[in-house]
Image (tube, rainbow over all chains, first blue to last red; front, side, top):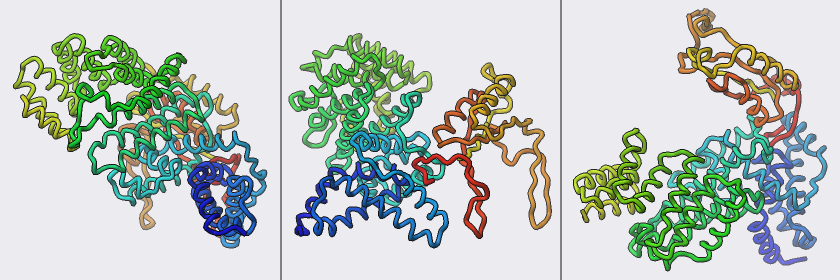
Length: 411
Length: 134
């Protein structure tokens, strides 16, 4: 006999380290998300008693997987008395070979889980909560708090996504090589959305939101471990380099601090060197994409000792490549800001005006902020004021509003 | 699992866009899906101006001219396929030539069940396991 307290402590540890792996494998073995979650909890529940009596198994993970699978099939068989289809299902599941748990299979299961949760056939607003719930084990309450919405709304999106996975038969597999680029794009987008949701939250009251950035970095690390693709490296590098500036991005009183004005001594050197190494590795592969290029731009900033030392020539060159890889008005705007640093505000203003004249970014506050800043530098106070005021009407985020108001009062 | 791929397209564009497929190309693609063993049926439809909508209400049949709903894109044809899972269905649907000028809605087919036995009306044809319950 082992003391209950000791078993519970051991189980807590196993849950923290292994529950997502066990869940990912059970989904494959049972072919259903809900069935697998139920089985996972049953297995841990049974373990409390059984491990006290029989001792802690040599491989807790394998024990929990096979116990969960057995209980799920057993449960289906009991329900079969009322529903014929459940009997067929139990039979079909049992006829499959008993799970062989080699390390490769288990790691593949985790990758299958990520690709399934981020399947582009699922609603865009369901992919993020489903991934956070199933892959990261956040509760619906935690997800709701982070996204400033009601737990019921999050739960509903997750339920709908699971119904679609089941009813439309979205397969539990890593996509084939032919589908991979497209499907990976969807996974990377979900991870970066999670990161940005946390990163753009700058007020002290939203601590739980900045946890999302850490969760996204953890996801990025996991994905890189499972699938060492250059763009996965690029995305992880981008997130690390952005996170390296966390302590410098806001002042003690919660005000937004621009890159130029940040105290670079506050930047996290460890994150920067890890990020830069990943960027170099991604760029060397010659098979890189937009995330690696954005990370490379962040790396050039990170390597400049002072704002004045920034290599704008290199940054503009990287933006040119990025624009070819992924044409977008936002990228054009960022390039205009970099170009203004090299060629002066008049050049930057011409580019921003051209974007706005095409009818693009008209409702993007940062486009109007950039225009206002260029006008201010050119001494066109009236135009600067009107552009800042336009920008102010477009953002609800408090630190951003305060930043624009401060700029207005300084005109 | 069976999927119905509904091909929608702006009728005005379907045969006039520079990217519009000719009948020969559509026939060749249908033939290739057939050869892969995935095809159950496929047809192209005449324009919606030839459509008639029928409703039965209280035993009385009403007949009106035109399609069920006026939409920007109209139903122009369909493929009924038998695919392993949604991924395979999407691959087949994406290569339907008319997808270049219109869009293809991929819908899983619901098996009707006999009330007494709970058995499906006909055996599912190919049953490969995915994350969806078999």
